[in-house]
Length: 449
Image 1 (cartoon, rainbow, N blue to C red):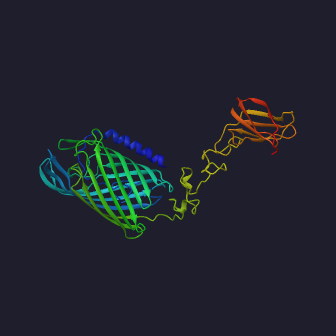
Image 2 (image 1 turned 30 degrees about the vertical axis):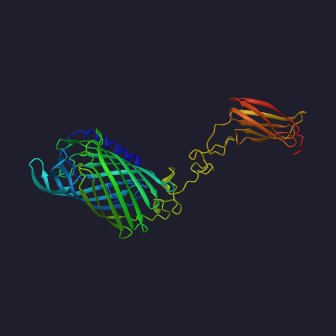
Image 3 (image 1 turned 90 degrees about the vertical axis):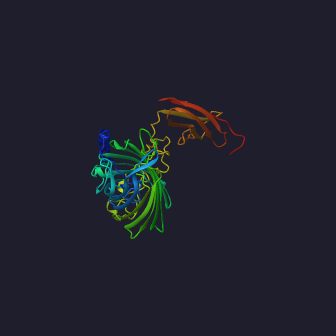
């Protein structure tokens, strides 16, 4: 299912890339766009999946002071947007244990903005650009602190292009996400590509951008209190990090307080570090979130008991039949546990050659026929070890001193041990399909073992 959805996203991305050169009529003055997973933590996505059939609703209020100001020669010329109020409703849904869907609908209020065509001030309110997308958590294991995900989203120009609530064209956001967990602390990093139509602000052209961001989230008092901080910014693809207008850079902090098991509230704030487009003098944040408890999941593996074949044993999430909810200590069922199996998804073929490593091996194609005798020519009962074959430990019979063993072609060291005889070593080379007969001679020892 996840691959079908990401194939659809790829098709959508190609569509957006074909239209990105088209000029866009609007300019969105809001850089603070809540993450589509509805985690309520800010603009950064984390790499922790929502969970199968679990869902979240997040409402975020944002007030920005001077997010769009026109400067010339370092001097403040005009406040194009001096106050911007954004109300953002985000919905997140876990489609599978690893794949999430998100939808964001913003509603903005722009009091007293400057219409650069008429040089008159107006007030507008209305929808902003609607966004929807997916996040696929590619790596997320309980015993490893690092998680990785890929995310893709599309923006649709539903907003008012005249009042700086819309880009005026389609956008595509493609992002790589990493998360590191250390007990109650989490570190998050995002790196993405934003494809868009060409916008203008004064004599500045705004084209495709690179998004970057990093942050931390921590929880206290059994998750009842959360503290969040993040920095993020955009830079141009063609001329990255040149000029502050095209390189907005912002930092925000906030706290989250759990009211009940499912409901929480948040407050926070921050501001821009420069005069980039959408980077405000300061920002005030508030919001509320609901997170569904989800279906019963007794073993806590993210798979509801209703769909879990082993509801009391957590899935080991090793990439092998992870959807059934059962741990797979021996994926290939060859009798060798995955922790000791060098080839956990390929069964051992047990052909007498390195059968303990868990990897299938080609059948031996050479044969060694040995005769172990003393210096007097009498047969000897001996133990023969052939290196580097850990399984080739054979015994010659007492009547004829005879043994036979099949081996892959190669070079071997034969070590012979027998009671009353000195240990002897021989070098033997076997070719493909060769049948070699070898006479091993042992010398009596001065000491009886």
